[in-house]
Length: 164
Image (cartoon, rainbow, N blue to C red; front, side, top):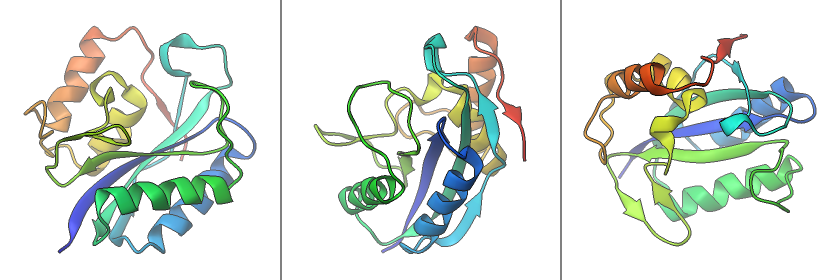
């Protein structure tokens, strides 16, 4: 059985563009069938943390991997691309987050789907809107379009800038 998944990618260290490209290539090889990518956006660090700006992108595809298998695969790709985890909210070479896995709502110690704070993260919502404006968030019961409009009205963060 195939599941439609949406993954959020981010990088704020090193050659951000190349790291996103390498992550996309590795994800496509999982495989993720019908693989599509959003544009790449530059955004300020979440909640104004003192870090370099991020490049962010959302990718989508269909996979036969379970949510737990997909998480392990994403963590493996991060590690292969040089990510180390030392501190929460630290700068990173690459970050791959599972935003959605079909209409699954999951809250476990290892994995939360939909992504915990998705509705407050313009760097996910803007590229996600590009790929799937009518996708309905299974937890919030609102479309991505509606989530993005709400974020634009209520957020103090600048709208991410499309760079490519």
